[in-house]
Image (cartoon, rainbow, N blue to C red):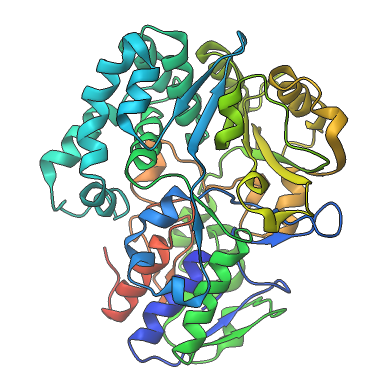
Length: 466
């Protein structure tokens, strides 16, 4: 197993459960890939280096089958999954309670309920279909068809057509912007629906102690099955692994091409080299002397805050990720875990985590613009900053080689590339016993382990899933 991200560890567990002697090789000194934590600012302040809030982890069919609680993983649910502050001092909210959310949406509550209730009610049936290769026949085709009819739309025009109030439109736009697509792109609405449905069904929790706790629990369970993890062990070539089989690679197409070398047929190599990576992110972590002083009180009860104002403003920001410009008012995704997990900071002090989308491999420093956006909805925020850590796309890629150009989703998530990802072989390769299992395979980005789960199942079947 090459790579110890959530997908790599999940794949390793599945192989170990099947009785295979399995070794995980990790290039970095610490395991975890996109689920790592570190003291990025000051001693005693624990920050999530990449992922921070995990609705997909608690929804994951793979993780549900592992005894991760017995290996130290504990979930914390903030009182509100999400708040979205507006310029008038109010905030739209996404509560676990569908009734509470609909009541706060006022005139749009009934429309929201009609669309959302079936998805939230049948979330556990919907998730395995969303998190499986789309080429497979679904277990509940009518439910998936209902979701697809909502998901296929571009988010911005759908929000304007479906909702009447600025609050409902902004709330939906913020969720849809997790797609890392312009909100005029087909299927960008899918993220708006699934993240809201997840909030109502399972919440948007944080792991006690930081995202590293997810990787540590997966690793602990893997080792309890007899597995072995080797860190500081960068695999440059598949030749280094001798006749080991199967070999699963939690890497993106670019790294795999380098590892496989001249073993790959020319046609398959060209397909991988043509794989398109998505926009990047610019990330800031703060050590704070006090909680963020939000104008809207609801924001202090939320684990996640979407800082971006109106639908129109969010859509304008996300249109810049194609590289034509940089947003002066970027849409900022912010988490404030220490409000609910005091282990993240010294007593009475706090951490916050935030990022915005930027063009692929962008070199601009977005720190000032991000902080200006937060200050806009939380006057006095800057006065509470003790220290900060800013990470460009290049910094993120240095930390985790899978984050090509700062792309945290494993590749562009548009319709053209989402279904056959990274090629029609999905997890398979032309090399006997060699598979891909990173977020560049279905179902794509986020911490859920399902890419690794499906790849390992394919490997155990002795054939490529295509």
